[in-house]
Picture 1 (cartoon, one colour):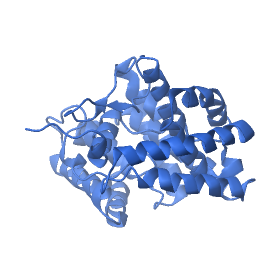
Picture 2: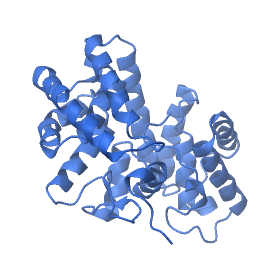
Picture 3: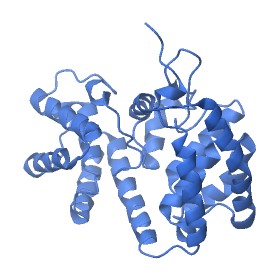
Length: 300
């Protein structure tokens, strides 16, 4: 499934973009919203993806004029699913770029789709070969399971989480010193991303240390741009600077999560699309819904 689409239960019922006034086909817009909600909340998203394909086969890509900016964008996101055949998704990418050039669908939707397809192909190519260092892959995987176990909502304990992060510091540094930042070819796409996630839970110097190599890995098709965006934004906030991609969410006591200050915010969604990331407003609400334990919501 799409890496950046974390599941949330209430997202599709809320507006995330420009208001959809006077759309030509309000019925289709509502249908897309319902499909997107089902896609995010269902244990098995086969049915909403199959329905989205039926709509595409019958009507093509719904335009902004037909369903509004938000529904047009969400429909494109639905069609990036790996449950659809690759040749179909290649065709959709071409159609999306043509429609965006005519200003019929959001430009960031077409960019997002094209980039996600390219990144998927890179990861599939990496998965087709065994990692060069399976032992390192397994070590990263074991550490990551512990890292994530203490971050679950049920039984969440901030002290246990901090202790696990402290315990992981020395092994992570040892990996950095010996191997650098693990790549797709070295450990596979999953472990490469897991390593960076754990680095995010370490002190600021870890992120500063990995950033140049991580960026080089991304440029070489050996790392997921989402990993770089998260590490870069966190590093900017470490320095008291605005983030660039909107991956860093912050809150104070009794607040809900929200985006930290963003440099050139009007263009952030286009920057995100160029890395294969969904719109920042969708990402922020999904993440806040999924991880309330890190920032308890305000009391009414």
